[in-house]
Image 1 (spheres, rainbow, N blue to C red):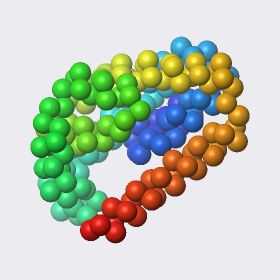
Image 2 (cartoon, rainbow, N blue to C red):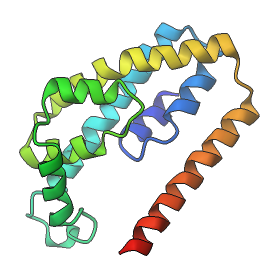
Image 3 (tube, rainbow, N blue to C red):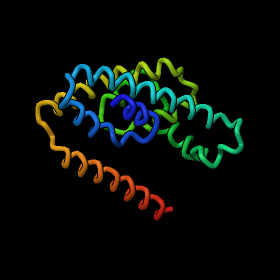
Image 4 (cartoon, rainbow, N blue to C red):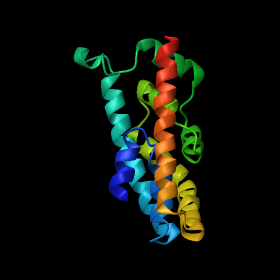
Length: 165
């Protein structure tokens, strides 16, 4: 579980909910919440470090992998403050926090403080998902279907965005 959540924290984070619901069946919710939050925060810290490094402008070969300057500037305009509370609240919800990650990387937000905000924000959210997984006993096939639908949604969203460009 921790390896999946570490990888999720450092990538797209679309397996988090099914992972927590699944492991909630086998462990106490507080254990899943605590260990999962720590693993996710560590993965997010690595991702923030990488984003800050990639967006620093020091690596010309990274420009093709890094978001365009326009996208970064749009994120900074849309989310002008990557404060601790904003990061904590964003991580405590199922909403994507990618724009705040980009802002935090651009403004040089301290990685330790970022990881702490992610950890504290994820704790209640992860606990509740593990509790639901323990009490509701979501069947594995339903988790797989949910995962497939999430992946399909991501593919459709990407396709629509590219079609508009």
